[in-house]
Image (cartoon, rainbow, N blue to C red):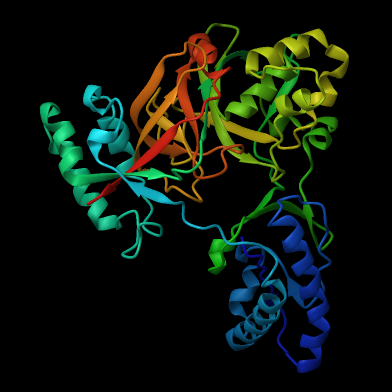
Length: 434
């Protein structure tokens, strides 16, 4: 990913001398970008002079009233200097290799009825991205997809398979890679809307001081930034350990849980269901994160020789057997997830409800959300083959690469038993419009 930064001139006067003075700050931002955007390890402050601001337009609305010529001139000069510096900073991601196949080559397709997949795909049809599905997109353009979606709604059940075969062509993604397919679920966790001795672990809302920077708002590519503004500095947001060490204000707490382990695994899943003391079930969903990299604590335990087989169940057993090391292990993953109440169960990154065994989390850098996919893998827990028409609707911190997926298994303990141990190679195919 090519490193980029955005700087906007914040004054009424511009001179060549001022530009030269600003170049040292651009250089500092270049170093920040190469370290933090490419590697996503937010550990460096950016000193911001009075003549320069970094972050998003909404942090300084006054920019809209200043001389647009000066803004554009400084911006172009800064970006030109930065592009020269950063030409070797990172590597642009390539489109995944694709191998066209026939539907008859998809193992299990002859048994697929596609009826259960229809409402899942229809949900995604309403949330397809116009900016991704352009006229030049290899995934088909937006209008083409909308036409197919309308036809999908009207197609009788008995003709559904024929609809796919007549309108789509399967392509295998990254055919030279083995792939890795894991699974996730929606847990049901005891909790309370009020704190008590039993319910003392806070589940936090999205903090008011958390700032998200979308580089795409400025026509730039690259990972966004997450942090907070402190005394003129764009500062990384706190890690898991730093957040948990601070006592939260009551207004920042969504609800209270019994166990820090419950909270941790809820954060891994990204959404879940909370059973209140009166038996009522309420839903919580992903609201944001602190911008830190995700670290798999199971991998940490395996590297230290503490575990040979990694699953949610084996990690939980290790945590129960080593209470004195629990805090240390949980803090190995600095990424922290914030929550909000949800009217429905698990809500995907595409903004639609997750559907058991039909929703697949993918890396959107390689596969756009909303694409119908065919997955051919195996269930670790049972040993049976898993060959199913699914929809790429979700994302995940650990889901990186073209041949990488995470299967949503559903709600509760049965889903947890399937999701926990799931780690299998497999083949992934995207169904592209003809």
